[in-house]
Image 1 (cartoon, rainbow, N blue to C red):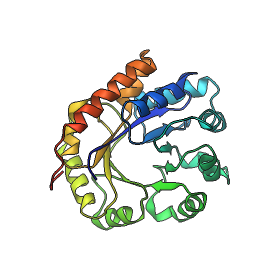
Image 2: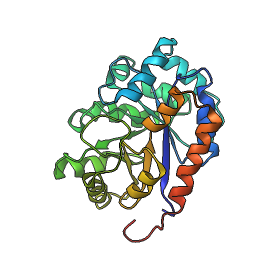
Image 3: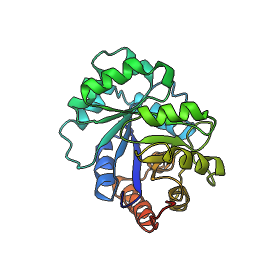
Amino acid sequence: MSGKLLVPYVTGGIRPDWTRYVEEYARHGADMIEIGLPFSDPILDGPTIQQASHHALQQGVTVRSILDDLTGLNVDVPLIAMTYYNLVIHNPSFCADLAAAGVSGLIVPDVPIDEVDELEATATAAGVDLVLLAAPTTTPSRLAAIAQRSRRFVYAVSVMGTTGERDRLGEDALRLARELRAMTDLPVLLGFGISQPAHAVAAADAADGVVVASALMRMVLDGAGPEEIGATIAEFRAALDGVVVGVGG
């Protein structure tokens, strides 16, 4: 891999023009884009993403309306959906619907690896990569299983807690990323608390890239338009492009 990966997040339906954020992400250097499918009880999400999801749901957004918005959207980077198992399990065609809308990856954080078999089979059959998460408290044996079974990338979460903006990255997050990278040839992306370009640079010392979510959604909730968010993505891109990729990074 020649550079560090940048994966920004947007809550589907957060604004009527929400797909313009997707377009701006792609235009300013995103390698993949994570699309949040709002759920009423997002247990892994902190206050900002919860607020974004609640706002979208108040506008009448559904999984179907988000996928309809994505269908035919002309972006040249992979789209990765993130949602909770309650939405998945009640729709037998969920993964097929994602694929039909141009979504090629899926993150379902509340399904432990011990219970992932059925979802993994369904996603694989639909041509959707199931991305698994690992936390700093995950045991070595489970880390190895996650590294082996995840597809597209492994999502390393920086803290044992919810998403949200933070002042700095802890050493546990960097240790986790290093451990995972020794177990897999897949990219290891660090998320939860990557709030500014400096955090992305620090994360890139140990990981193959970053997921940026709450910081962007806070800006959108505060009124930032697609072009302004695009400029922020460009700052993250420039910071990551300045990281020297060597043996350790």
